[in-house]
Length: 329
Image (tube, rainbow, N blue to C red):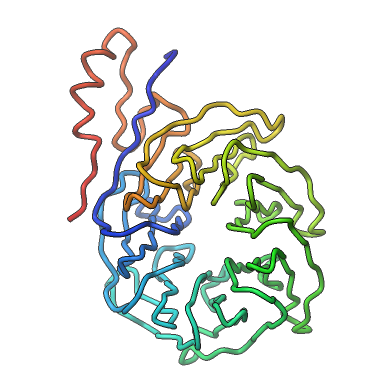
């Protein structure tokens, strides 16, 4: 199986840059992937094949952030029309529209789908109660720049946010206070909680940094060959992937920090990357308007990828390349 070529699945359908994406957990129906796009139409797909499931219609501006709850029954999106929206991910209907006073950049569910955290260009982090009419029950101010990402952490008792003021902050939901702060020398672009909740992955400048969730102590930091927009740690914490301005996808050894490989696939900067919940693939979203799905282990039979013997490779790869283009209209 040496020297197998990585052939990503291309998911088209968006008409503008894809700026964020999120996977659900594994469900009875597999797992799902949602994408945020400046075309204002978040899309839901089957996570393992990229097949289009549906488009959420209703935003009147670019969508900057998206989220799926664990079971993929609810979706959320934050947009330039100053709203965060909650959607029924099964029917596609809008459940709540959460009004803000500026562009909503980020949305994330808690583990029970009871609350949604949002971050906006008001420099505020808010928590909405979804069991009521979708009212804001908590608000955290202190950031001096637009909020980039906000997520629940530490068993949903805290919110962690990062913003254009070059800080990451930890908010205690019981006291309503900021309890910790990490400062960076560049704007943090992405924030991801590992599958087990113990590690935070943050990108800024050309750096991918990893922090203990409990202490916000920096565990390691790796410099990558480009300005990096997003990074994702594999569920087993052996490797991570990242992408940024040079159009490439990078795979690194998390333990040693060494680059394993890089792939050119997109025709524009990479804005978002994430591993699937089973770790078998990772997805990327780009300025070129596409999502791509990449195999963690190249050559493995999984999803739409068919395992081929090296002797068949020359004949098969050319013949199957076209079937690997997953197009959603």
